[in-house]
Image (tube, rainbow, N blue to C red; front, side, top):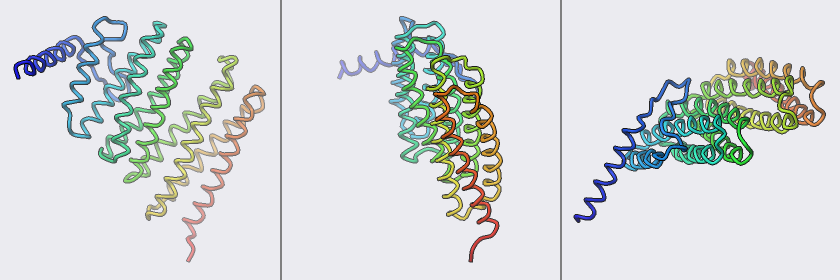
Length: 293
């Protein structure tokens, strides 16, 4: 018993020490938290230990998911800082930890044990995370980029899970978030194609952006159909979808002709998907205005 008590005291002291070294200055949703201790610090071990202890003693699912999201954002801030210093191993370490914390968030989203408000927070945060990880990936060597790409996949899946959870009660909010993200993905693709600043990677990066946009668009269609089946008046939603889809279609058409030859198949596929989406939204709008008997 005495040995167990000593171990518990030691763990608590270590956790307290870590927290005293790095008290996270969590900012508003618009920014990442201060990274505090980073993986290049000899004291970084204590930061990880403090987080493990804190999560271990957090029993409420809502609080645990919220805390895991905060810790993921702190690790993301660390990964960005390490990428700026071109520290490969440290960037990968922070990115992998981000992945693990987001996995805890996703688990609770999938189990539907968190609030709608937290689902919305995760959906909005994940969109920012993707942008930050993409920019960080452009600064680092290939060894660290692999870890950042895994983190991007975790962020994308987290956003999908959060949007599905949110759509159960607030489909219009979930669809609005998707629309913002679709516009953002299209903007990224257009900017890359116009600037052609990414050289040989322009095709792969553009295809990646457009592929994710396709996944979001498919999820949006699924949510719109489900909302209609559940008796939600989707007239306003569909009208907005029509307008935004038309805008994206014009943007993609505008860059297709001058895009690199290798990038055109991906753009043309995105254009075809946008056309089909526009046609589906028109059908839904017609049926909602003139419902059958």
